[in-house]
Image 1 (cartoon, helix red, strand yellow):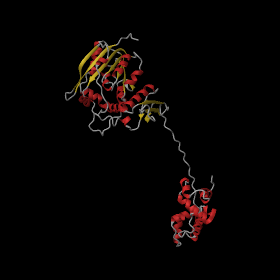
Image 2 (spheres, one colour):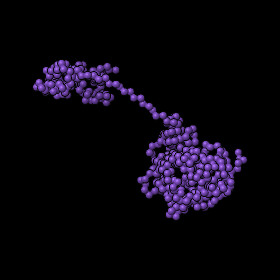
Image 3 (cartoon, one colour):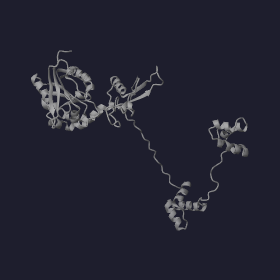
Length: 426
């Protein structure tokens, strides 16, 4: 290994000088250019090994250099007076010697006549933000190398950024459907509550290309399939302040149906779970003889329900109901919620399991026009109409009941089911 520049140059020139290799061939493997090799070869022929020593690029003369007598005058005056460069410039100008202020400053600096300031080096302590388990998961897709029996496969990976817990699945396609399937698998296996999911903008996650079959304008993106709950949450947080006034303005009769059920079947008190409680308006109808607990995914809605005396649970029905014990509430009510849930059957099974004495569920039926009228601005998330027959052996059913009427005459109908639960079940 060469220790000097001279030795490095000779290492590449030696096979050329000894005629072991041609210069062109050496240039193909040499890290230096062919032009440099030619220059070194000429220097070696003219001066031998000394010609390979790099020469200084410092100029031999500096015509514009400040004369020695001026430098000495500046240094002498500085040592006598201790003045700064600007004041030295003024003093020398009075004596008929014009020297620029910056030139004086450079002379003083080169001679070490300037004050040295001690700069305190600031050490920054970088604090890494701590995340809780489930606060943020990251999902990505990679191609499985090669084909297996002529088919391509794709590896889906989800990693928790806090615990580094990870789960991998292999699918034969990469689509929005498979992304949702992957998330559903992780939601069942991940031991903590998932609060956020991070992906890139690939169509696998955004539904950009495959979700345009029902739109005439294909330039508009659909809502991220995995963010539909977040979209609903934002909408109902904004809707919370005007929810009560909307209910009062449309002559909402659904709460009164519940009260008539309770009066008829002598339901007067007990613990009551309001699944999808909204702002807690049900308490205004039933009174203070019940102990109200409400579940909703809108934090703003729940804050208004707490003012009315509710104990609240923040979360999605599909998740929170599964955490509650069987027969844990005397009465369970679920109104105006099921049309947002695709899997209503699973939710109803949980409601029946939790109810100890009675279960009341409202099945509202909307047309597309009515949905746009009631939930103006709530776009991109599907709504579902479900039959009341999902509840087996109901005690009483009010079919095709007029729930509310809008100012323009638009009427919303639906079914309300009341069921007395067998208290002796296991």
